[in-house]
Length: 110
Image (cartoon, rainbow, N blue to C red; front, side, top):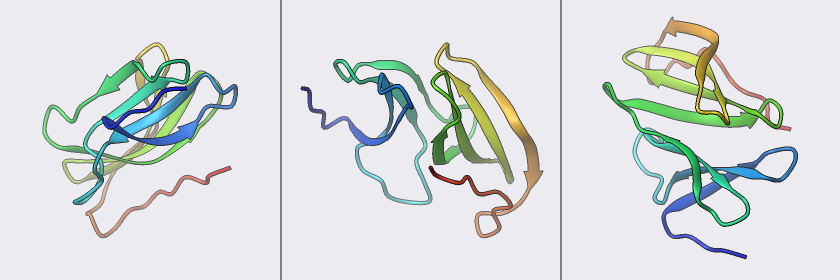
């Protein structure tokens, strides 16, 4: 067992080895940092900030044991980003224009 005050804990991957870590305090428009944490001891496997410019990470859903899908908003565009446990980032759905009040995508949770 482990505990943390550094993260808000999120979705656990399908094989139970990793989970999503969001900022310890969730306030404002949305989370600007994201981490994948090891279920063994809570250490970050990978983490991402919001540079360049603010990026916001919403609705994290595990696609499979190796990839996390995230609805993102950055610089007036929404996208679905596929995050790999190896640290790779790629668009699962290309960015489209929108506003903070007009999100064109939703991810279904399981």
